[in-house]
Length: 495
Image (cartoon, rainbow, N blue to C red; front, top):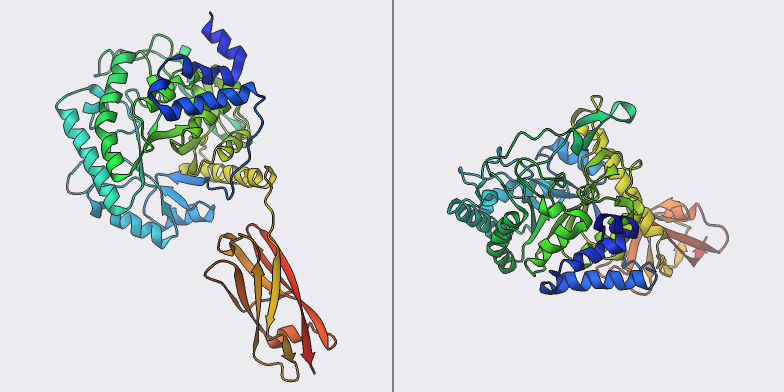
């Protein structure tokens, strides 16, 4: 059988089936259940799922610095979740709990949530430039010492309240054949395997797929039990990109970026744990596929269904495996709304980072580029939440005015309104921005401890100015991120 031709013609369902065909799923119940259920849904017509509400997925950003300028940049663009790189201290290559104090204090000051950190080593670096290469070179006993450092990092994270870390299993770093012109004086990263000139093996020598898997498995079997012990999530980023035919610099295959997502399913199957998972770069995944738009959505669905995807990197590409360009979100082959819809249907609850945005000499530090990425992702999340079943239903609201007899002969002092919601609605999650009565803005308002009501205070004189007759209606409105609630009450006026 022409496997490449088969998968190109059959699309995403066949790509997911390829994972099952490798024979490794039986060792991982979560992977096996995810893959087989996606296949079954496809066979039945692939009806869209209902989205669990409220949505928990959100835009996030990795890296940056502990400066007010950086925090203001994130908050200004609606980014509230941050994945920082935390420096070690005392010449160590591992963290101690106190290393996290400055970062956590900084985040709290600016209203940022630290939901993941980057390990001090095992980044997306080329092995010839990696300061701690022993794990990826299978260089014992130094790799055991480096693994012990990561174990110490995990215990320090637990003590500091950090829930997750991300890392790479990289030998070649991020491969590129250069940059090419893009729209508006921007440039795009290009990878064209036919343009690469192979300089020969790295200091790791010849690395076969089997030896690459051995190094990954050796690491997992020693690190993941510690993650289980401390309940710390470990999110691995796939290699970027897949290796060209015949390999490159002695690496015969970047095994986590195999076609059809098979390397990612195998990676999850090596250790069964809710804490062993992926920093799933959808751009890197697309760059590993022969037909990204046909294949990626079912692969992402199956991976997300394992509940072992802990962060998403999202960028768009033109092209396919061995020949692609990284472009702006609106001009590539990945349909962002379709992909985020899949994540929402699967209950994904972590961050989505814009990634590898095109750069421009007119945009110092690529701040404009990433601002576009933040806004694009946030806009798609809002659209998915608004237009996907089950549609959000506003709760029924009622209004009380206290006191409900207003002495307008002496219109001084204040009057309170109490807007109450029925059912299981919780106004603490409503994102309240304003409370009005008859168009008059409240002096102040507060949400009750159970989230069922909002008490707002108004100047009696302001309310009196809207009154006509001995009885009149007060219409109360509460405006928030989830919509506007309106209720009314009849009040008696003494004149």
